[in-house]
Each structure stands twice: as C-alpha cells, then as structure tokens.
Image (tube, rainbow, N blue to C red; front, side, top):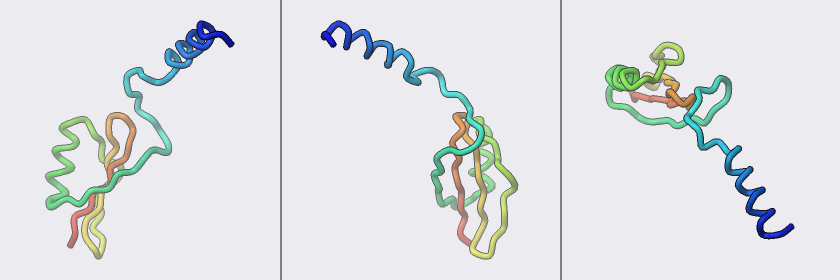
Length: 82
C-alpha cells in the first residue's frame, strides 16, 4: 500500500468514526457514581441540565440512591449516605 492509498484509507476511517453529535443510547452504557450531600437538590439541578431520572429515588438502609441518564445516554449513580 502506498502512502497515498494509506492516507485515503485513513481519511475514510476518520470520516466514519463517530465525531458527530452525541446520540442518546438505549441499553448498556458506562456508569459513574457520585456521593451527594443533598440528592434531591442534585437530581433537580441535573434535570434542569437535561438529564432524566432513571427510576425513583430509593431510600435504602445505608442512604438514598438514584440513577440519572444524561443526554448522551450515560448513567450517573448518586448516593447520599444516611
């Protein structure tokens, strides 16, 4: 393969690579978890930025937990210790 052919193939790969706008996904995604001092306020602020609550805020023995889905489809786990 010549340098020119390699360059053209690389351009095709780059043009097909996902550098486009983020698209919401359904199904599996990465999960980041954060500790919140006030989970209700944090959920409200994230929803104002476009996130969606993925199920209810749950009161567990160890504290409150919630899952938020970002506009790009990633899930954020929130935890407020009891």
